[in-house]
Image 1 (cartoon, rainbow, N blue to C red):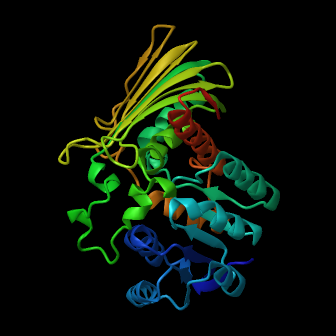
Image 2 (image 1 turned 90 degrees about the vertical axis):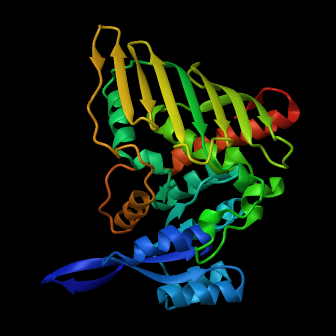
Length: 359
């Protein structure tokens, strides 16, 4: 479907038509304000459950159309792209419907909560010629992109071992508590999204998905099998995760995650890669990238402050550019989202069964 066009400074500028399915707390704090700030995009319609909240969002952002029915949104308003920020367990249903209508999609994390569904979405998007963006914010940082270039340039050779760790101050979120930082938001996050195990609550789906998205930006390898242990700390969902992973190539990974970081501390995300020709260390807390090669070389680039700060804006802007057919390489593709889901799905199955599970 063609994007709307308008004349600006004597040249023709296309205007992307974007719809939002799941116009809840995160969409109203991040996606919609970013979209509304662009001259080359318009939010043509939103979808959410609950007429009171729907009216509140529509009024705040001056959005022309609103509905509780996502199928009506896709049929009537013909968007070029759809932002899917609905609850985790709804991502597959909503993304599949949008892709089937030949819409590009930005699908919030986790991509899906089921490996089979994730692979299906990637297949459908490939067949339909539409793009998928999963807003792994770390993947859009200059620090991550520098590290990815080191891997692409062959400095490490063949990856043989990976160590991945993430920690954030999110324990109260996964315990279903109201958090003070959300008190002034238009809509408060629903506890069921984060603290209900039947709706893919827990640290793995809610946070570790970010770290796995980063890992698969740098490691182009399919996950094969996973063994995992999870700690609940008495909660209904996982607060702590530990897993070992074997890739299809034979490489292995050690993965850990914790929600119990002190509230005043900076979030931790560390990734180490060990290859046949060198090793790479990536530390987002300290914004540091270091590479050693077997030839005796050390690369320790000077980086500006802020190059590792998680980006909420860049994924949305990239998505608009994708809808307008002017984006570059996608650092957070459907394939990366799919591989992240494959690992998480296997982790949760393994933690329940006590066995090694296929990814």
